[in-house]
Every structure is written in C-alpha cells, then in structure tokens.
Length: 211
Length: 228
Image 1 (cartoon, rainbow over the protein chains, first blue to last red):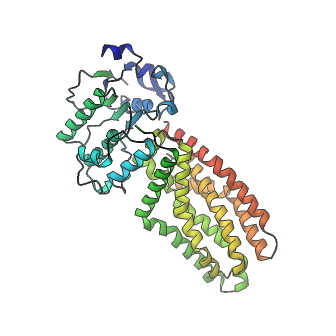
Image 2: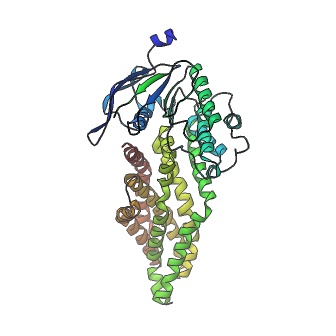
Image 3: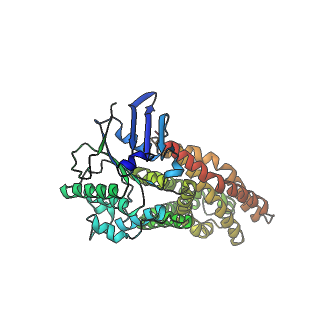
C-alpha cells in the first residue's frame, strides 16, 4: 500500500466546488484517491453527492477548483474508458433484457478478458432472468442488472451513486464483495451511500460533504 | 481487456435502436396511419376532381410527410434521457457525434422509410401521374433525412425544457421551408415535363452538409443540456 500511496494518485481534487446559478452546491473539497482505494462520499440529502459524482464522471464541467486524473487535468476523452458511472438512472432499456442491455454496453466499452455476459449475470444473481425484459424485473433486480455492467466492462475507477438502494441483504453483501474484489485488483471506487455498509477490504477513505 | 472497434460500437447503437423500435412496432405504425388518413381526407374535402387533386398532390404528400415525421420526432432522445442511457452513451469511449448519428439513422429507418414505402399509394389516391412518382420518391429520400437531422438538433437543443413538443414544431417547420420548396419544385417541374435535376441537386447538397454538421451540433447541444 505504501508503494501505491507514493505513486501519483488516480484521482485528485483540489478546492473542487460546483456552482449552480452562482450558488455553491457544496463547499470546496480536497481529496485524493489512489489505486486500490475505496472512498465513501457522505453527506445529507442535497449536500451535492450526486453532483460530485456526475462531475467526476465528466458529465458536469469543472468550473471551480481542479480535478486531476493520474496527475494531469481530467479530460473527458482521455479517461472515459477507465471510468464507469452508475447513477440513479440505471441506463437500462426497459424493453430489452439484461443480456441485451449488457451487449450494448460491451459494444460501446469492450469487455474484460475471460468474463461472459451469462457468467456475470449468474454471478450477480440474475440466473433465469437473462432474457426477461427489464421492465418486468423488480427494482432490486434492475439494480443488479446495472451492477452486472461493472463486472463485465473494463474500468479502473467506479463511481457508484447509491449502489445499495433497493437491494436486499444479500445484494448489499454482493456489492461489498464486488468492491473488495475491485480494490484488490488495484481498481478504485467512489461510493455515495446513506446506509451503513460492511466493507471488509481495509478502512475506506471518507469524504464528508457540506452544503 | 479489449477496446471495441468503432464499427462495432456503431453497430451496437444501431442494432439497439432498431431492436427497440421492433419491440414497439405499434409506434412505427402511427405516423404511417396518420399520413394515410390525412391524405385520404383531401379527396373527400375537395371533391374527386382529378385535375385539382393532381395539382395539389405533391404538396399535400410533402406536407403530410413532414407532419407525420414531426409526430415521431419527439421520441428520438426522450426515453434515453429519462432512463440514463444517454449518460452512458456520453461516458462511453466513443465519439458521441457518431453514436448520435447512428441513432438518427435508426430513427430515419423506423419512421421515414415506412412513410416513403406507402408514398406510391398516397400518390395514387391523389391521381399523381405514375411517371412523376419516381421523382417524388427521390425528393422524399432526400427531404426526410433532412427533417430527421434538423429535428435531432432541435430536440437536443430543447432537451430538458417543458412542453418541448410544441416548441419543436414551431422551430422545425420554418427550418424545413427551403427543403420543402426544392422538393415541391422538383416534382412540379417533372409534372410539367421540365428538367427537375437542379432542385434535387440542391437538396442533395443541403443533405450532405447536414449529415456532417447536424450530429456534431446534436452532440454539443446534448452535452450542454445534461451539464446542469
């Protein structure tokens, strides 16, 4: 871990803030995220957690402060293949099945070596639902179908907005497993969550947000 | 880890939109039925006088096509914005303009092409001479992609505003006037036995320009729309 910390951080924010109609959405933030680290973004409702994640994903422009990716200013086209974002809107087409949804994602992003859509869907707990239209799945199952993307697509940094929402206890354990495996692979993740989470892969970094 | 080829990504987007359209086949039928019914109303309202119908036929068909396409345009990006698919498309390591171009092609294939297929039937209902129909089809093949491209840019610009449907109609219809004039001019020239190639060439020139510029404008507008 010490070696990784000495290296250039994967993601670094310096006095990062976001203004909406001249009002700051959150107070200036400073943090670093290294490979193999997990960061929990904490804050009350409306404290700007989702805004921060959308900013890190490159959906929102950085206007105040600085955001660096591997030591260089973050540019959307330079790092899109390394950042995976899972927001409140899951990005699933309701008329297509989980398998078809995954096929689109791999068409756009490519896929990790030695994983298949069928294997990933079984691992995420959707065996038997691979070809069911997403609109017929429960909210928790939809969440799982979206999480399957994380397993299938290549990506170094995961930005997960409320990944535990709608999931049952086994689903929450599953997300923790995914995060542990990802950080063990030298991936990094930023997770927003209200709920407590039992993460066993070392002490996560905490990013506290204030409106 | 394998980064997908650009052509694979294009194929994935195109196939997705065509598959979605196929799953909602009844939506494809709506503009077609609308065009059929509107065109059928004209002989009822104006009387079955062959000369009159012949004279207005090309204009009626062109305007009907324009309005029928307007019905379906609204849906081009709406569901993608709603379910977050557009965000995922933006975050993919692929050029957004090209991906949106694929979406526009898919939209044209599923809304405009069925309308063009029934055009000979509409033309027959209005007694348009059979010799003119190929020119009308050629004009439509150039005008309908233009409407899709202009429409896509305007939808991208109005994305996120309320009642964007009405706004879209108000902005799109004036933009389509030049295209409409050229198309109607070509068909009218053909009807009178005059050379009709010049207006068709103009349409083709506008289309080439729009094919290059519209997806770029679309991508920029959508990025701004989601950046708030």
